[in-house]
Each structure stands twice: as C-alpha cells, then as structure tokens.
Length: 236
Length: 309
Image (cartoon, rainbow over all chains, first blue to last red; front, side, top):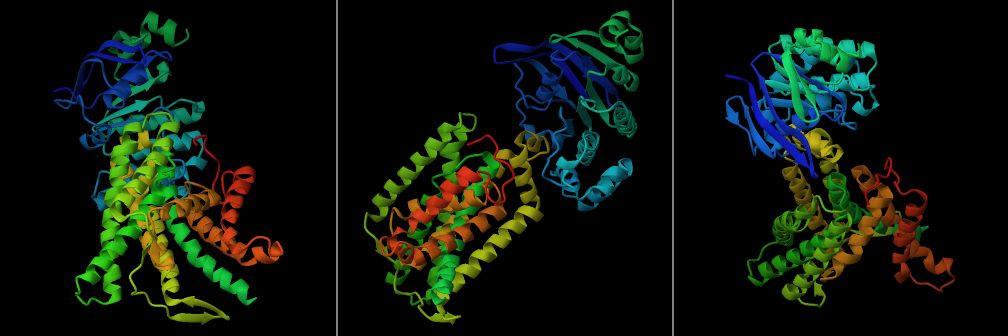
C-alpha cells in the first residue's frame, strides 16, 4: 500500500487554478522530490495535502485513508507533518519550547525528552541555544529548529517545503545531510525544492511541476541526466 | 504626606482591579488582534450575578456566614461569565474571523450595547446596593487607612495574576496560546486546535472579569448596568499603557494607572487652586491614554505595534 496516493488533484483559489490535476504516488520509506520554478504550484500542493487549502477536485489517499475534510490540526496525529515554507518557527518561543510544540499532541514525557536529546545530537548548535528565543537565531539555525520540531512530531510522512530557501550554500549542505539522515531513519519524505540539483541528488524519485501540471517524473538519476531538466532547472 | 500614602493605597486597590480586567483585553488582543470592547460588560455581569446570588441566599434565610455567601456568589458569577465569554466569541466574533478589521471592532461595541440592554431587562436601571454583609474594619499603615476588604482585593488580584502568568509561561496550554498568538497557521500544523485555544482565552479572560466584577461591587458597594463601561475603558487604557498583547504589561499598566488616577484625584484640587475637584479624576486616565498613543504607542513593555488596530 502506498503511503500517499494523489489522483487528479486540483486546487484553485481567488479564480486562479494553481494545481491543474496532478497524480503523485509515494511508497513507504521513499524520499521523493517535487521540483519546479517559482509559482509552479508546488507549495499549493503541499498546503492542500495538510488541509491548509481546500482541493477543488481529485482525491488524496494517505496511509490507506481518504483525508478530504480532515481539519489541519488532526494531520500531525496521523503522522502527516509539514515543515512550512519560510520555516515557521515561533520567534518568541525558546528553541526548546519550539521543539516541544512539535510534540504538542503527545503525552509520553519520557519519549519527548528522549527525542529532544536526539535532536540535540543531530544539531549540537540547538543544544547550545536551547534557552534562546528562536527569533534571534540565524536562518540556518531556524531551519534546524523547524526540522527538529518535525522530528518531535514523529512523522510517518514528512513534507518539506523549500528547506534551502535563503540559506548560504554551506548551511544548505548541512541541512540536506540531515534530510538524508531523517530519511535513513525510515521516515517517508516529500521534498519540495527550487534547488533541483541538490533535491535530485538526495532523492530516489522526482516529479517536475510546471504551471500546475506534472510534466515529467521518474528516477532522480534519470531526471538529472535528462536534457530538458538540465536545460530548464540545472542551468546547463 | 499622609494624603500621599493614602492615595497610593487607594491607587493600588483600584489599580489591581484595572490590571485584572486589562488582562482580559490583552489576552484576547494577543491571540486574535481584536479589542473586545464587550469585556467591560462581562465585568458588569460578574458584579450583577454576585449581588443577585448573595441577595437570594440571604433572602432564603440559610444563615450562611458572609464569606460563604460571597464565595458562592463568586462561583456562580465566574461560571456565568465563562459561559458568556465563550458564547460572545462563538456567536459574535468567530463568524468574522476572516472579515476586515473594522467589522469585529464594531461588533464588539454592538455586543457591549446588547449586554447593557439585557442587564436593564434583568436587573433594571437603578443602582443595586451590595447586601450589608461587608466588613469595614480598617487597618492603619503609615498613617493611612485601608479596609481589610481592600487588602484582600490587592492580595487576591496579585495572586490571580501571578497564577495566570505561570499558566501562560509554564504549561502546555500556555505554550499553545503563545504559539497561536505568534503564528496560528503553524500552531495548527502542530496539532493545536486554534478554535479551542481562542475559546479558552475568552473563557479565562471572562473568569478574571467576573472576579473583577465582584471586587468592583464590594469596593463601591453597589452595582449598575452601566458600571462596566467606564471601568472597561480604564482597563483598556491600562492595557495600552503597558503594551497591549503583553500580560506583564497589563499588570504593570493597571497598577500604574490606578496610582496615577488616585494621586491625580488627591491633588487636582491643590494643583488647580480649587478650580477642579476630585470628581475630575477620569481625565487622568484618558490623558494618559492620549499621551501614550502619541509618544509610545507600543506601550511601556510592548515591543512594536503590529499594523493591526
């Protein structure tokens, strides 16, 4: 059974059709990427998957269940977790409080503490700054907070929206290393990125989105070698 | 000098009541950027219900001691106001969650008028005296006097406010409230039901309002359908003075405003050579409001004014 099966999904708001009928499948344990230019409809797709936008057509089946009409706050309990574009850290909460917000739905204090320690092992920088307000951190550190917070939610399927946005290349490397680690721990992931090269290198399969439609899909390796992808997204 | 200390004490009593009410304004503003002008009316209902319950219990002739009467009255008032706050949000504000900013503000004023008129229907237009069970024992401090009741008001207010700050800073509910006030969309992604948090905010604020209503009623020994209007405006001023949206600011602003007003009332006669009397004390609160809005719109403890009105 697929982790996620999207069929002919359409999303429209304010008279503009952002997503024009896409199909997308993610198997358990996979790291799949969705690449495309700014405004292609990638973020709209993700937001619709977690109930932040209403779909105007098609179906979304997650973990064997149709999730239409499920309220936003219920997704995290079902293991469907999104790290939003721009990271969405709570600026006036400390690093540790931000991490704990990821575990909001959980009541296993011991498990939560263990997971916080695990996050501090992955990101030693956050341990140093655990009492600091998240708003005072650098962009890269805030991305670490957002990823750590997602780990605290114990995701089954993690949606990652543009983790590299606005970060220095060296930090991006570090973030993608963690993406690889989380994936290796068995978390299924859908990674939305404008940095197509990195995204295709880290993922197993990829989809290419243009003006609300999926125009290409396949193994990431093949996409990396594809003439059209190279011209349009890799700047070669 | 005696007058000075006396006025400081009076200001503390008044100020701690303002602070308790200001918390209701500032919590709601912090969560949803709305100035709930109906909050003063919740305070009024709290005072009215307490007086009604105490009077009814006395008429029933159960022979209960005064403290028991007041506690029962308070419990009923708190429950009634929590329900009222919950209902106001559900009926009046929730449908306007995505409307333009002006719509909920005007609605708040509308709710305020509706509640006043309902109070007239239930309790009439006249002042209702507090049943004669209050203790008037006076304590002397540095040549100034304060009643035991007023001492209780100050201590109780400080304790409640401390408790609220603790809840907001240290508990999971408090963390969720702060997260929701900063970024409701992401809080939702974390599993926070934003509607529940908003309801909880109204319910807690209204409970504080009910307690304040009882305090106003015991302090002035009467209640009236219009009593929430002026004290609501003053508490709103206190919240703005402290920095609206900031809980510690509401407490500081409330106490400061109470003291300013009380000192002003004590000295206005001397300052104007007898031209203005202490019944002009209200001008101080609103002079403070105007000065704060001109020179420091973010208030004493506020960081920056978000562009929401």
